[in-house]
Image (cartoon, rainbow, N blue to C red; front, side):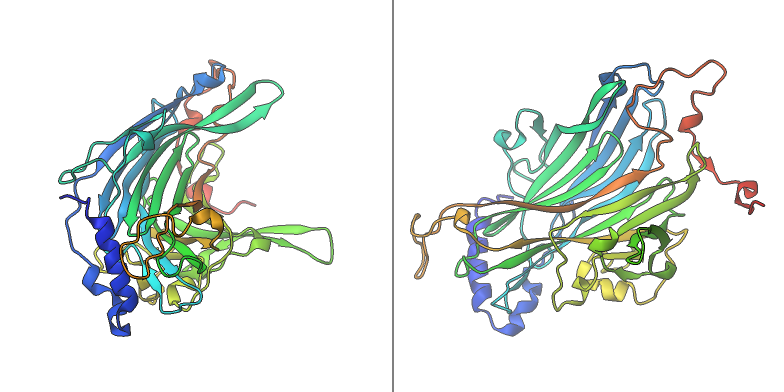
Length: 432
């Protein structure tokens, strides 16, 4: 399939869209049902020896499966992690993707684009200059005439520095591609850190909308993350809140069930440092539950008229067999049954937003050839604005990863810190 004509064709579609009657704005005409090509696999190892020392754990590793699809962009079909190169793989993700790219314009209230599910936009071609000095192009997916995904190994800066053992610079495996959405380009990126953290990012760039070059708008990336931590069937959603007491100098950190333990949505509160936590019934060597914290990177909290924008975080039970299971705008229907989200197979939904207030750095009019009456001859590209969130391990390790601890003594069990301990009945009994 040749995608070279899609971009100008999509611009024509946009112009038709702007002139279409309200009944046409439901956008079903632009949807296409295509079978996704098979997933590809990448792996990466991160060595402890890079920090010095004789730490018995030799390093960590990631194995990631990814795919691309119509109305999906670049998405993850599985991710596994090793806390030690001698361990078996531990499943972290079953599926992770952007479930919608929603773009409402502020003054023109009838311009509200569903850029992911409402149009059949393709993945953009990537070239060697996209990959940079530490990356490479992944092979084209079957049926694609050119590559669309870049794999990079990046230095992510200092992750710890202390008095005795110097410093450790972190590493990450990054998989990214771009959705070519007419005048806009969405860079979809997934980063897998050496310490087990996963970063989800979307960067918006491209040309401002013809006819509305100076109109402010919002780019909302709505994420769906099916986290299958360890076995995936006994994950529980919790909320962490930090609460200050205005009458004293004391503060409290509260962990409680998400939405009282049922499906639904909650809001992010800047004063409370809201985090959603996914915990398992498995414990580390210190007897603490293994989990992941969902930590947002926020410019602000987007609120529009649409129901699915009324909360920042949602949790549902996983039902991949449902026809509209992966559609973010269908969340109100997904949570209406209020199923339990404790010790279950659950899905996280989160929104990350970029507020674009146009500026002169976005481009220049009357600088390019004009192709239609009223064309302003715009040339230039708005610089990338990033939004996203992180999934950070909690109690996955029993000590600082990549720290050069001395080797274990012969009397100690060097593998104790690697065990995933199932909570026993005795451990579950209340203590006097």
